Length: 232
Ligand code: ADE
Image (cartoon, rainbow, N blue to C red):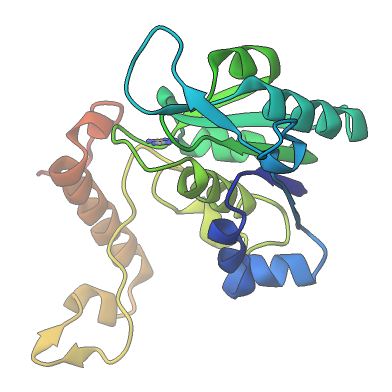
């Protein structure tokens, strides 16, 4: 999988790939990261990329010209590139999107800064548009990293143990059961005693009940999609 980050601020992105799981995926050749800076395509003599909004309104909007040229160049080099725009004005990104995007060969994330991107760019080039939640960030870069991370975990070979994908929250309507590590007792706090007894069928039932409980508390909206088995 190749990811191209189309951004005025590649430095905001780069650090994320310098450690941990995604660095290993790059080292193994499973993912590749590239950057495209719209400023490099600006025909303005001062390399300006934004202007005030036509029709009024606060803040600066990213001009069409640098983005049209950058994205034409991208599509010309790879006609299969899947172009994703990040904006708070879009459908929310969910786990099924991550699984679907993981099947692509090349995704470009286009991040807006300032008050956003001239709508004509989105209309002409977007294959998809995502929001990561109902709040406004200073730009799309964090949103693009979140989508890239969630997608990459679903690419074969990125996680060491593919089993860990199967029992995750959002693979079913239920949130994942709580996890515990060693020691079994820490500062007077014990892990649930059932986890210690080694009866795997009982542990499974307890985990299911705890999952249902957590889902009821944190995500009652998700619980509606599910037939509860435990008495909550
Ligand atoms: N850019 C600014 N806020 C955003 C959000 N919530 N999701 C995606 N892109 C954004």
